Length: 208
Ligand SMILES: C[S@@+](CC[C@H](N)C(=O)[O-])C[C@H]1O[C@@H](n2cnc3c(N)ncnc32)[C@H](O)[C@@H]1O
Image (cartoon, rainbow, N blue to C red):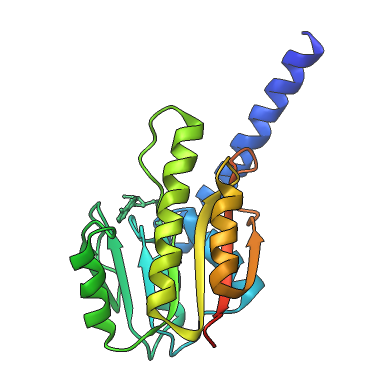
C-alpha cells in the first residue's frame, strides 16, 4: 500500500476511535449525545455553572447539554430551545421554537423575569454540503447570540457559544470583544479534531 493511502487509512481509524470513545461513554453515563462531554469539559475549564445559575440552552436537542446543566443546577432555572423536538429533561423548561424570532426572545425574558447568569449556544445551521457556507451560517447564529446576551445577561454573566474557525471568525470574535471584557476560545477534547468547531467563552459585559 502507498504511504499516503496508509496514513489516510490510519487517520480515518483514529477519527472513528475518537468518536466511538465518547459515544460509548455517553451510553454508559446515560447522556443523550456525545455533546454532553463538550459542556462538561468547558465547565471544568471555566467553572461557570453554579447550583443557583439561571441558564438558557440554545440549540438544545437532543438534550445532552441540558442534562449536564440539570445535574448541577438545583436552585436556578433552566430553559432550553430548539427547532427540533427534545424529550423532557428534569427541571428544564423546553420550548420548540426558532430562537431567532423576536417573540421567542421575549418569551425567554418573561420566563426568567430577571437577567440571566449563563447563555449557552450549541446551535448549528443545517448542513448544505458547502462547508464554508455552513460555517458562515453557524457563525451568524453565534453573532445573534452575542447581541442577545449583551441585552439579557447579568453584568458578570457568561456566554458560551459554538463558533467555526471559518472566514468570518475574526468578525464574530471582534463583536464579542467589543461587548465583553474577557473573551476566550477553547476546543474540548471531545470535539472532533477534524472539525473547525471551537467554543467562545465570554464574561463580564463592558457596561459594568
Ligand atoms: C449540535 S446540535 C446541539 C446538541 C446539543 N447541545 C446537545 O447537547 O444535545 C445543534 C442544534 O441547533 C439547533 N438549531 C439550529 N438553529 C436553531 C435556531 N435558530 N433556533 C433553535 N435551535 C436551532 C438544531 O436544530 C440542532 O438540534
